[in-house]
Image 1: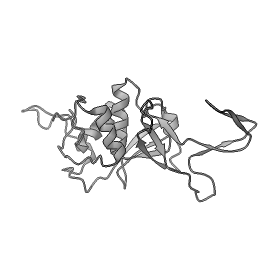
Image 2: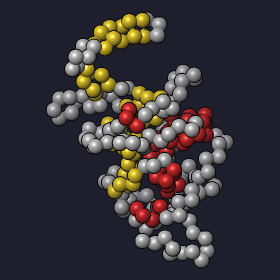
Image 3: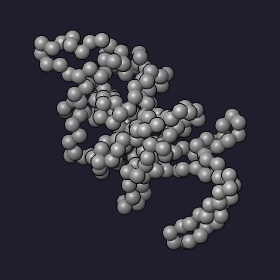
Image 4: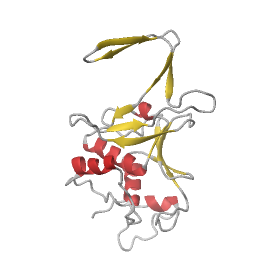
Length: 216
């Protein structure tokens, strides 16, 4: 299997274990040449950082988060395959939970003089909301914008599949503008990553005789 140009370690340790991940691979990526090894963690890291504009950041946990100026109230999310064949895969946000000050994580206030009328395609008008909270439950991965995924956190596996799908459909990365995707990675990790230096991942492959040209 071909490796990404910026893959320094050939480590086959990406684990697509969830039923939704397995179904996604079967439906959308079977037989597709994505130009790097999907099972190699370093390949996926390089793809997200080099090709999709994500930022590498040393953290305690290894995951991918989307953050703006405010990095609080991070909410877990995951790739979800729809139950209806006609629908596209979704980023599904975890159910509501109370935070320390009693507000709903991921919820947005419905107030300040704004009134919302809810509609359904078949039912019609469903009701009026003048105050309270609204919260995004899921997002079509083809239609999602970076503003909609702010403060969400995905696994490396889910983030890689989302960005591959968007790239194959000529859709911009979710890491853009004010909202950036951050690649959390430990400096020393349980994954078989070789030198344990973050910079080690992003050195381009070198031809014989060029060793040391990109060392810092």
